[in-house]
Amino acid sequence: MYNNALMASKLLSKEEVAKKIYTWRFLGDKIVFTNGCFDLLHLGHVDYLSKAASLGQRLVIGLNSDFSTKNLKGNNRPIQDEYSRAMLLASMFFVDAVVLFDEATPFELIKFIQPDVLVKGSDYTIDKIVGADIVMANGGVVKTIDYIPGYSTSAIEQKIKAF
Image 1: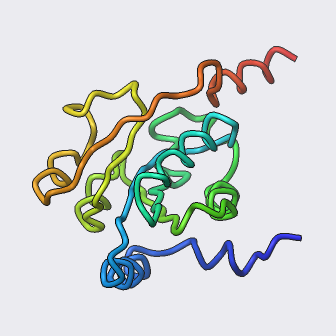
Image 2 (image 1 turned 90 degrees about the horizontal axis):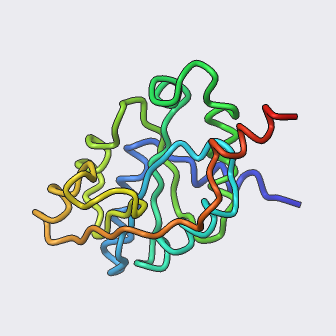
């Protein structure tokens, strides 16, 4: 049985994550940050996030809110509400914090968190990754991770619509 209190303890506000990050940095932990909508969690997401987590000691996920996801993906999205998406991400043992954001990009959140490692999928080039300039200016690194071919929320959505 899942421990809802444990999962909920990973869903943090900016202020709450700032306190955690302060402690983690004091302990010498490397903070990894990535972001996305993570609308229908699938093997591609799990693979990507586990690889991101392996780049440091603490993984923080910036999660597009329902408002942000709808603005990015269209009126039919998100399929799952932000609380459901956040709790699914928080249930993963290698995820340390999930922070919702309403903006179109996580720029302000990245600026606030100041991660040691910023991660995006390899469909991005480093010069196109939002916040890369901030992370590198502070001595951090920006990494891209290859996706598992054939896994995407859009592909799953199309498969469901075909039924």
